[in-house]
Length: 128
Image (cartoon, rainbow, N blue to C red; front, side):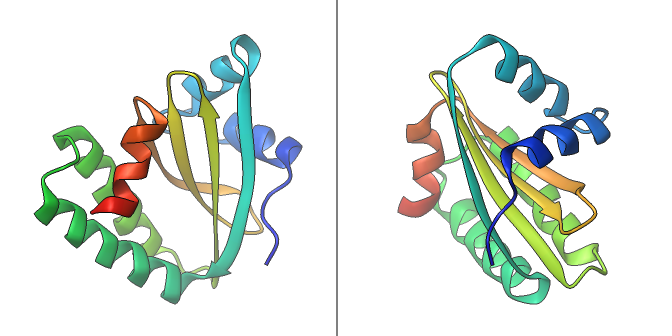
């Protein structure tokens, strides 16, 4: 399924301003050049199982920092807890940061955000 439009993404960050990294993302959107990818919306059971498996692999690889692993674990936990049938995943890139954002579709409840210090750090997920 098609991902989240940019304006809905901004609204989601505003609605979830107290969630970790949301306020920082809003600041980046006003201060930096960025690339936004609307991502995908998929089945909760499939995506939570996929990212749980990827988390296990990432932990064994020792390529991610403790904070990255902790944030990743939080995202997976929240994905597994949600009763929604659909989960969305989108991404945002700036010169200095990369974000992978997990949310409930269609109500835009933020499940969690993975923050990386660079695109290279985010790409480590695919190399684990």
